[in-house]
Image 1 (cartoon, helix red, strand yellow):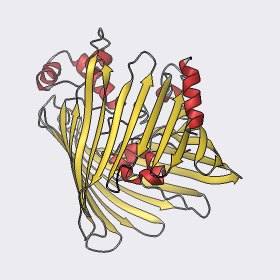
Image 2 (cartoon, helix red, strand yellow):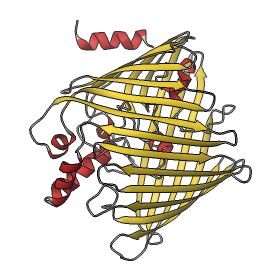
Image 3 (cartoon, one colour):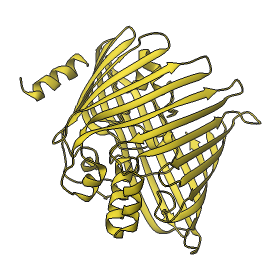
Length: 419
């Protein structure tokens, strides 16, 4: 039987929202995903306006750079007829440098799809969908649709990177049963290359390959919640994936995320050298501990078997600058680790010191070159507005992952108002 017929049949049999966090029977799989949505359930839509100002200091000691940003965020999720639901999510970012000079506009159509639910346990979705997978917080090997999706980065926080990105055009379905679900989707090739046009749908960034995915979730016990995935794309070998969360006690969740299969190294893909395909694995595993006073601490270990090891990474940094820049650009666009091993630490304190005041700290540490990215945020919530102050510092030797970034440190203040 042709592969397309098999996949179409699976999509129908799997026929509802494919996001792990949309499945009530697999809710534990999303414990590490901090993505939040403020869509008003009563009116079905939410609009937000965000203004931000930033200041960054270049590593070479040049003049301080000033930036401004105005963002308009619209989200809609509502039933439009019996058994039918419409979802729309879009954000427009307008940026300026040096106080209203050098203006740049980028529109990110995150989601736009219709969902048909002929029965309570089965549904079918069609359109641009942000299909997020993975239980880890700092690195997601099973988030197969993240490559090329970050059209406009407004924050380096994990929740922002997962939510504020382009969805992929796909046909997606899901069927639910007690304690589990089966999801299947197909995503066709629609364009050859990404677009830099401000209001482009940018299908070339998300739909430049024919792809498919099957995901099976089944709670084994009240504390063990696994998910298995099989992902495929044209001209590539299928990849196996697994997500697992385990409730150690009332305060501690252990999680693991793994993806493996035959694939070329990132270097051969980035530099377009002859393929060196072999079996490679990617892994993210960690613990999240939550205290009674609303402090949440996460420690995570990340591994990427397709990335450069310490010796090759240092050799690339000392070689011709062009391959080094090409490799880093490829890894950033694919949202992959550029080196084999990394550590990720994340801490949040809700209602810190006073109610509605949250503190967040993040550290990314490259275990191969010892460079690190530090990020802090203080945020105060009102009923319809957030005020936040963010600070970032990139540290490391020249040529390291974070030491080579042009900005040494940056500060951003933002005000977000919800209509």
